[in-house]
Image (tube, rainbow, N blue to C red; front, top):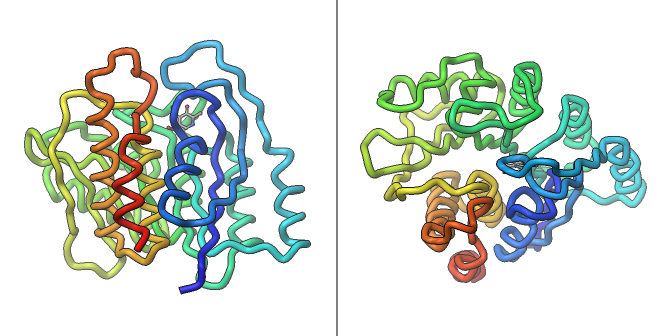
Length: 280
Ligand code: PXL
């Protein structure tokens, strides 16, 4: 197979182990050339720091993409994460048409909410717009909160059954996506995993692993980046979800006992396992 080149569009949070500072090293470790389009530059992420700076780069996006079009640059996959505004979502949809190579794999992580709440600065209208971006994607990677917010379904935190998860995933597919990988699914105490459903599938496929005592920040971005790397390397959605979940779990294990590291996940410690898994 010819070497693949991918584009990822999300912010640079200078400190905080999320978005581009996570996507670049992880996808590179998968052996894939990773091009970036920063949607904004923040001094830190917004999840627990106060007083961070935020430089919106929306006005630069069209010029950057137009230059690529002029140069004949296209991408075998485009992966979007945290986006700062509804206008950026529109620009990403436009990008899907302008710089996608033939058979380009479009993967959208609607990184905007968790634990029943939108991240700081987002509202319901933004969530609906993100739903429309998921509608033009091949694969979408929401957690349960994001899936509920994009589809208007109720958010249920725990003790839900498979019928709820199935309805949620069907609603995400109804937005237009071909495959949904729902993260943070748990039917039993002590287990956590991802659920995979593609259009036309009769049943949901799952990958579960142990649930750790503490959540870590940035795990959605770490999971999504490793998933993208594995999927671009030709792994099925379920296999990519397994690789991404095991990688994320290993990073979380390395972080559990470090109280001072509340703002991120030490995914660097787990990079060798990803290199081994995907580079042969
Ligand atoms: O991890 C998702 C993320 C990405 N980018 C920024 C964020 C967050 C989550 O808090 O604040 C700026």
